Image (cartoon, rainbow over all chains, first blue to last red; front, side, top):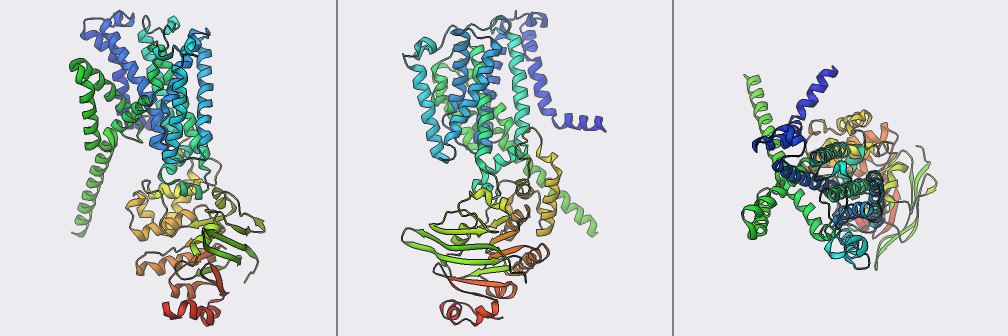
Length: 354
Length: 256
């Protein structure tokens, strides 16, 4: 019996497992294509494989960041324009603690956790007072204050002002230069764990109430839910994830540009989930892959006019796939399934009538 | 008839600017009765319901439930006191399944709302409750459809199901049959009567269909321009001269 359930669970998630397998093999396959044996890849000696690993790490980090935005916007219906702050706080804090205060990696991540909770509480403070677009503007205000802080000359000693934070020394065992394969698998593992946690969360009693709040908050209140705490819970998980993504970003780069604190970086998160499908977890992953590869590919092969074409493609995606790639896929496959069900139902009744 | 008061308002008043929507209404509702509130459009019935359920705060006055002043309690507490409220305009979760709409209503009063590490489907008691409620309001077959795709009459049933799920003692039903096809009305009214009688419930009902009101109500309060015009049994109300001139006379034909 237990074996059966295990097998059916595996079968249900075969798409996910397949993707996972692809990402586990990716560094080695890329190495083989360029004539590097798996052993060389293992020792971080294949330049091309390292490059692809780097691109993948960036995608994993973007995916984490997009997931965190999808949780509050796509699932709970909170439109935040200050989401980049969640990420930037993580990125800057990690950089500053490692560089200026000589924290160990573990201690740094401990502080990240605290910072994640604090900023969720900060955003949560205004939750009972403002809704909808007002919440978006208030959060934008908060994030802007943070942006001004990091580019200010007064804090330049720590943040590097508008040049950005540079010269972060990453512990050798996870160094993006000499131990990239390890960093690749660490980031991948973190993404998988966070993804599974999110999957559980959105299907838990708590997450279901978050969806209800997105659909009709007034009714959720009437059903007896004190919606504030559910929105705070979503913000908390989102903030922790984004801060973690920011921390990983610093470790991989290892510089922090003030751009990650700007509105543009919030729009990045929004774009990714629009591409992938708002309110679908897989969409955040697919969106991150498409977003990063488009950006990279266009820049490399087209050059100057890349952003223009990039923009045109996003507009096309929104026009032709209004529910995003995963969202539209789900809708179509559901329609197909229902169509088949109806056809089978008709055939059934017809054969009975005979 | 048990005449113990369960719900009471004392000089309840709501002003919207210069408009007095509810004008010092004092009313007592007895336990286990079906108490209807009637009145022409704009009489303040829905505003009165909004005050009872805590959706809006009164300008002055009190709402007392089981001897306790609940006037200024937050709206999400209402159902925890045992007061369920349905809406005149279907107020559902449009993009969730019918099942999930009712399941959310069942889950609300439990102690599992913040167990984010467990799947919602692991809590069988809410699912069982949901199936029972769907069976009762006749939506079992529709469990997996999106709430927004339901025909209007079924949305009214869903609305009722969502307040039955937590099993409240008092049901505030704001025009449960509004917009329903005429042939569906008796079915729903029979269901409401059955729920009230068999479950020892108190039902407060806003309804426009006079035949229905006169037939099913234990007591009727007539509201007119925000104030209580008359209160009594259906027979008393029918015989009341004020009611006849102000309200029933020109507008409705009575076939009691």
